[in-house]
Amino acid sequence: MLDFPEMSPSQDGVYQIYSLCYARAPNRRVHENFLRRDMHDGPMPLDFNLWIVRNAHRTILVDTGFGKRTAGERGFPIDFDPLDALSKLGIDPDSIEDVILTHLHFDHAGNLDRFGKARIHVQDAEMNFATGRCMCDAHLRMPFDVHDVISLVRLLYADRVCFHDGEAAPLPGITLHALPGHSNGLQGVRVMTARGPVLLASDASHLYANFARRSPYALTVDAIATLRTYTRLMEIAGALDRIIPGHDPKVRDLYPNYVIRGVQLTALHEAPKPHTLEDLAKLEVFS
Ligand SMILES: [Zn+2]
Ligand SMILES: [Zn+2]
Image (tube, rainbow, N blue to C red; front, side, top):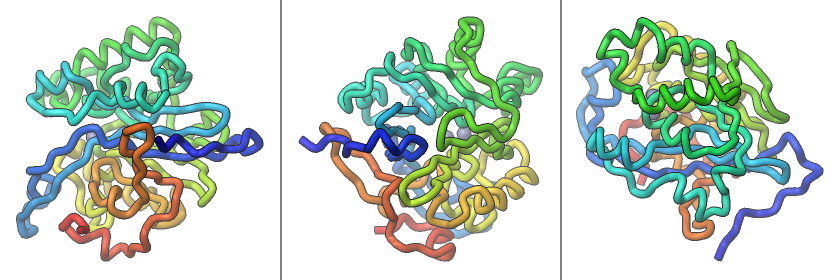
């Protein structure tokens, strides 16, 4: 059975990054993925991911997915419980010291009560957004799950939340970058790998086509900020093949996939197939 490749302890500040796709929305249509509706319609599925960032010194989770409770309440099936997959991979949730939440939407910030000691890294603006007056509006509240927000407040009172205000460098080889627009306090995570920095953009761009076309996703709280964020992605990542969108199945087509301990993972620290901005702007999933 394939296991994670070893990394040398001398390489702190350099990581492997794997995305774990635990749910999919296969029937999603083009018009559901953009604010603008004047594009031809057709299938445009979404993946739901969390990201495992690891080296010889530590394993960091970027986002925590959602579990069976949320899946039941929202009528949104999951392929498997993401924390069960972590256990199969030999990653005990109680052993994780750092969890970085890109934002607090239900599909990114669930399961928080299942980590016994992790510090949770979040932007000030996102916590303020999810616990303040904006949540009086059902439209803004919809992508948040009150159980998750309460879990985070409980962790705050247990001294386990680490707040950031814009750019930060919480761990060797890891920097955080404010990328607002889809949510007020969304942060991207730039991770140093052997092939250079890779930016986990999360929902700063759900799909490659969102930033490649400069066409914001259907759920956007600030379109002007989103368009600025699309420019920032390239500035922070430095190259097109170092930007990883949050929900695009094309990521699984472009990057090498491995079945490690029975769990399928996509290796983002390895070189992808060559691709251009025009390729990424296409609405169809690659075959
Ligand atoms: Zn989101
Ligand atoms: Zn999302």
